[in-house]
Image (cartoon, rainbow, N blue to C red; front, side, top):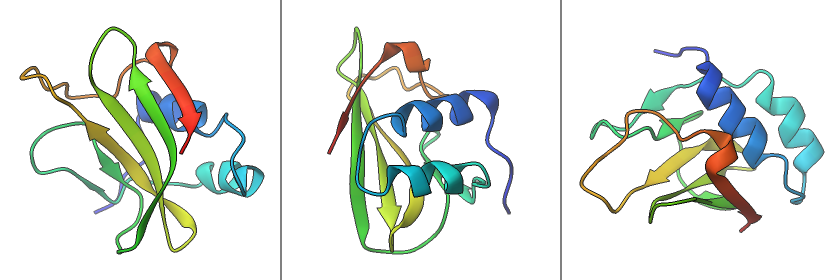
Length: 106
């Protein structure tokens, strides 16, 4: 089952794509039509845009004021998803505000 991105997911995706990486302009265009195709079974805010293997991390982000992070990955050259990496016992149910992200190319 697919669904549209939430406002928060959309704003985080846009923030992650604001850095200069190879193919950024094309990825930004693709992001406008991206939908969520799956979520993590553990309840964290990780989202998948497409199934597949061969993940390639494009953008990393740390969350200010925490030890948590996330990354944007591609599958077969297309947007694959946003993966949450949390180390605290307090697992969020949604992605952090983009203003809290310290973003860098992978």
